[in-house]
Image (spheres, rainbow over the protein chains, first blue to last red):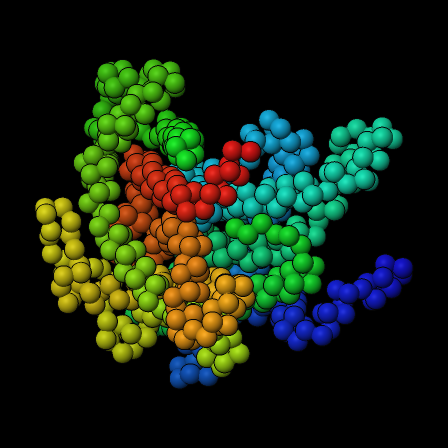
Length: 305
Length: 325
């Protein structure tokens, strides 16, 4: 109750209520996340069950067009799956991979940033050198290389089976340096403050000080960064899947759905590419807009990458 | 200054060693040079003999030293599919990618500089607001969707421009296959380069606008106004010059990022460049070619980053001092 009151009177909520773009983005995002999490209930068809769809229904146009079928509101894809249901499940896959990858990124990055900033000296220069090396390469190229190597190492079949956890690891591994730098910068700002000195004076050891005292104070920048990172991770996943290095067509994400639709665009089946593409853009856009708003409100010193 | 350059070069050599270690580890663990050489139809005894002769039974570090030594001589192994040295394959594909990157950069410069300046000088005008809205939405659109939309509009519906391949090319100097000299080649270049530039445009418009607005606030510009200089002179001669410095640095770094996006663009347009070749290598399990590509991209990045840093260090002494600690 107390927490709720604090939230109700906070500057965060105040500025949220006065920003129509933030409200709009938040509503759209909640709806999309809600639908994708409730996919088995909301989606008209179960697209993971091969017995429920028929190849004869393939490439049915959206229901309002000629030859459209009332059963398939947005038409069907190349395997005869209801496109709307496939998109809902696909969004769920993209969302899970995006959030999972950001958790991995944050875990590695925070750990390295915290140690580096808190201890300084040799540890700092060693860890930061590693971070710098990876930071010099665009994360997308790192992700593409890593997934290509994983694909060769696991073989095509095994890779398709394990695609979801592997993609979380791949995107997680490719984009952590920005967390490390951001956290390190905030830790450097915090560690000479009096409360850290006080904690050291009463005899706390390094780990409790880092974990209970310094880390919570770096969370503002981590939170803001994470919103943007989810959008980036979803975009990376879509790019990898589009290149054929991501989710297989049997369990498509939005990216692999666009890839499979692209081959049929020349025969006029535009909807298989169009609807997933629009959904992907809207999804990324609302997250980015929310991230922008959050950054303006909380105004942390972010490391510009 | 000399110390700064030396330090920077030593750093880049270390980075290159790390990259070669990663590349070699991949080669070592999943590559199969015997298969690359003779195929599958060999008895195990013969395989062992070939392995011994190639030195594949040596310990990891000896093989790694050999790999680095060969790499310095320009030998990055044989491509299994092309039956040619991997480096040769990559070099034969490089002109396609380079032409794409060059034309994209030209489009980028021609559009982003005027747009950025305009948005900075007249931030409240409708056109500036429109440009800013475009750059907000543009960030959220993946490059392959722009490319597909362009293909659908200009190739499928209107049938104005070709949607894949490089078209007619002209051979210059024996190895550079250029598409820039024929009308057909240029027509094939339009869609890929426009979609590739669409991903970088929002960033550059915003960057130039932000830098320019910052410069317009400074005292020497106020002074220029007070002197009663002509508007155009203040904007383009005094203000714009000082906007350029950070823009050039970012441009250097973004050039590297553009290489990553060429992989996506080349896939959509079946553009016979390095990125397309890389994905084919993955499909064909051509490990040697994949590792060679990794090393080549690594070299490109390290060189670009080092050159940008050194140029920046020359222009802006603060970087040099900060680096020394």
